Image (cartoon, rainbow, N blue to C red; front, top):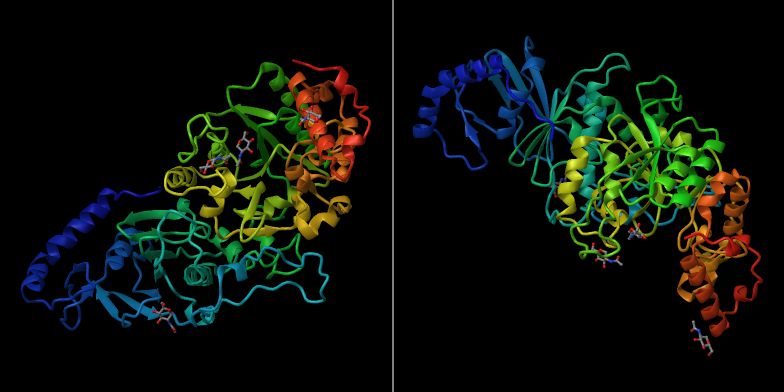
Length: 554
Ligand SMILES: *[C@@H]1O[C@H](CO)[C@@H](O)[C@H](O)[C@H]1NC(C)=O
Ligand SMILES: *[C@@H]1O[C@H](CO)[C@@H](O)[C@H](O)[C@H]1NC(C)=O
Ligand SMILES: *[C@@H]1O[C@H](CO)[C@@H](O)[C@H](O)[C@H]1NC(C)=O
Ligand SMILES: *[C@@H]1O[C@H](CO)[C@@H](O)[C@H](O)[C@H]1NC(C)=O
């Protein structure tokens, strides 16, 4: 967590303040009014002698923003979700005035799913573009001169053990974000430092207020000085994942892309951006080649653990990956030695802080069109999976040391519904930005989606090979057909597309996709089961011509 310690001047100032006010404190303690919502009570010299009770946030502001208020006659504080009266404090000639920020509460009928629907009309089959329900905001023009926003965050129902999906909490966070941008972002070249104090055990939403901008946390008070560029981008994005923001979507406010980096042009080459993957050797080799063929010039970085062979590393490097060894991270809830025990290793992408942004891609993805424009999207952007959740196979994240620490701490409290990183990350990043389906086309066709298995759109950006991987089958057909429960993942069309790509790869890279004795045994076993069951798709009848069946490796 970022925090700042007081320098010696500040200590001196604080100390003299205490000395000055000591007699008054004594006065207050003995004769002052008994108040209940009060943390600190101080009486300061004012024009009209009067006793004030200072809320905790006031002390924190005063300590944190001394530099900022030096030489000012007046600072203005916006109060969000407080019922206290508006007061004016006079402190050694500095007037601190509070103003209530008025806005209508979001309707209680609104559910989280209204903002994060499972499906939206991406292809604009209906004439109206998808929209998000409204979240009322204050009249921002009435609050353009705030120095500090103090907000009480609603934390009722928050346990810290699961994602907190509360619409009113989202509203309070967005109100604060909009106020800060409205007051701080004067013009692109003129910005004023603005601060936020959140009061509440659950704190602000980390999806909107980055831990990197946390100056200090004292009890349930959190003081932030947000980086305005990133915050401005966030407030211009759609409210939830009920729309796709441009450049991939046709809806959305203004051109939020210009706030993605300090660069003038969105999408310009930036050496501090990279594609990152892990695991599967053959898959990762094909993935690297496919990204390179899409004319991307971003860095390619592969994270691996100590179990990988030197030969595999050679292949991965030849394919285009820079490689880096990492230690694995356990899922604290997984059983010892279970296959999903170290499924949290992916969290290490947050440690790659020499990059500003990372597009993580699972190694079972193949890219068909350039994805570089994803780098303009903020953390966390991803395509939809099911319900209100995103698929973590392709996601835009922003490396950050404090975020990594935060994720590690949370991994001990928050269980993952599927034992993998996806379930866990969805509980941490409940507010995410939607990328189109065709950016991360899931090879999964349930129920009424079945018709799609042979209708893969021509303009697909990437296919995510769920289920058994193409290189784990014979090239003749998708072996997900051989298992009843696997058939939702079967698509001969997608399978064929992978093998077409393989055919165009250099031979020295193809060899990493050879079959082993064990893989062949498993494929044949699957075929036999399908034959015994006489599965009606009859793929088990197909003659196998794949030459890899004769060139097994150990
Ligand atoms: C909005 O909701 C909060 C918390 O439930 C409540 O304290 C406040 O009075 C409500 N405001 C309005 C205008 O209804
Ligand atoms: C994986 O880990 C989780 C704990 O997070 C557990 O509930 C799950 O049953 C484990 N196994 C599988 C096969 O996912
Ligand atoms: C966990 O990791 C294993 C091995 O890489 C993988 O096969 C499995 O699908 C992962 N499980 C989840 C739930 O992500
Ligand atoms: C398929 O059926 C044959 C004949 O009944 C049997 O011998 C064989 O074990 C079955 N194979 C599998 C994998 O169930």
